[in-house]
Each structure stands twice: as C-alpha cells, then as structure tokens.
Length: 42
Length: 309
Image (cartoon, rainbow over all chains, first blue to last red; front, side, top):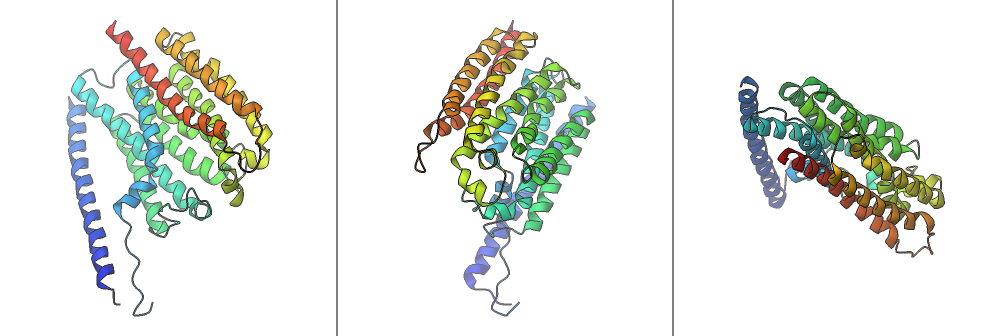
C-alpha cells in the first residue's frame, strides 16, 4: 500500500486534530462528572 | 485493493460536529434552556450546584438531539445525496463512513440518556430517550418516507426540549410544560411547509411525500394558515391558565398575530410562475425562526420579572 506524501500528511493532520478533540472532550467529561458528583453529594 | 489505491481518509472532527446539525441544535438548546429557566423552581436551591446541574441537563438535551440528528443523517444518506441542500453533508459527500456516523449517533444518544438519568433524574431521562426515538425512528424511518403528515406528527420531536428542561427542574409533568410542547408542535407545520414550498423540487426529486408534493400547493398554503391561526390562542394559553404573567401573554399574542398575518399572505396567494421568487414564503420561514426565539425569550423574561417581584 502506497500513499502520496500529500495524502499521508493530510491523514496525519486529520488524525492529530481528532486526537486533540477527543482529549479535550474526555478532559471536559472528567471535570463534568466530578462537578456532578460534588453537586449530588452536597 | 491495488497497490496504488489509497485508504480512505478518516473523517475530520468537523464532520462529526456537522452530523449533529448544529443550527437545529441551537434552537433545541435555546428552547430547552428556556424551559429550564421558566420552571417555577430550580434543580437545586444552591445557585452554584443549580448551575452545574442545569448545564448538565442542557448538555444532555444537546447531546441527545445531536445523536438523533446523526442517526437521521446516517439513515437518509442516500436521499441527502439527491438533494442540493443536503448533498454536501459528510456521508453523501464521501467524507465519512456511514457506520462511523451510525455508531457516533448511538453513542451520543446512549450517553445523553444515561448522564441525564444519573445527574438529573430518570423521568427526565425517559422523556429524553422518547424524544430521541421519536425523531430517529418514528419520524425519520417510519413517517417521513410514508405520509405527507410526516411533519405534523414528527414535529413532536422538536417540541420535547422545553418539556425536558422544565421536567429537569421540577421533576414532574404539569400543564405548563405540555403547553410549551404544544406550541412548538403547532409551530412546526407552518415553519417547515414554508421551507418545503420553496425547495419543493428537491423533495419531489427524491420521493419524499412532503405536503406540497402530495396534496399540492393550494392545500399546503391553507394548512399553513390553519396551523398559524390555531397557534394564536394556544401561544397565549400559558397566560390564561395562570402559568405566566401579562408580559409573556401580550408578547405571545402580538408575535402570533404577526405570524398569522404572514401566514395569511402565504395562505391566499398563488405561485405566479416557475420563476416566482417566493418572497412571502421565505419571509414566513425566516420570521418563524425569530418567532420561536422571541416567544421563549418572553417566557423567561416573564419568569425573571416574577422572581424579582
């Protein structure tokens, strides 16, 4: 399987942006669950 | 696969975001938030905790709506490919694998219901689940391809957010949230049919039985007017039953009277020819969006005045 350098760099760019988006969503979700837990316990 | 054939590129995160129909979601978030803010009691009496839980409730409504929208786009990908308005969506444009869209829709839907149940309450979560199934299954899969009444009954899907927002705060279903549901339910046919009148050829092309295609323009125009006239007293009903003050009641009557007047213009006119710019229909469609934002903003302002004393 071969890919042109352009397609390869585009694939890496998309994967990188998806990874960053997923990391931000997971971090926000952790903070949200923590805040909900505090709110429900209070 | 040959040596020179490249693997398809993975979908960009922006395409996943587009699957959630962000423009529709803005209306969903707004009406859900208004239902929450107009309710007679907060989710939690402590302001900070109320803000956390209120944010969570609205987030769940948004995630649920996004999940249902993604499932809608997954199911209708072939139809979307045949319509100018929808051909650039991620699946028909070839930027996303349909299975990824389906899984994304299911994941968002399940996550929203579970989070709503655990953080807010299971009655609210059940209503949210019903709203997702109503849009993704009852409307998208069952009604839309089968009956020109698809928008009338399917409009219920878009009517859930203020009901969910209200029930999230109060924990019970009373007359007021049901009336808010009914207002959006009655608003949907004239809103959507005004759009369908000026994009009629696209729906006809892919065989969707929209009212203008099946019953004809004349019948559609009369029905737009009928629903707008019914909306006039219904929009003021929250005031008449004592659920709101005069600020909401008078605002609703004025906004609905204008809605009825614009619908009257659409209801009694006929298309002048194939090149008719359909100005009246476009104006009604644009005003219908402003109308919904304004009437729910008035509801919240009325509650705020009441609380301020």
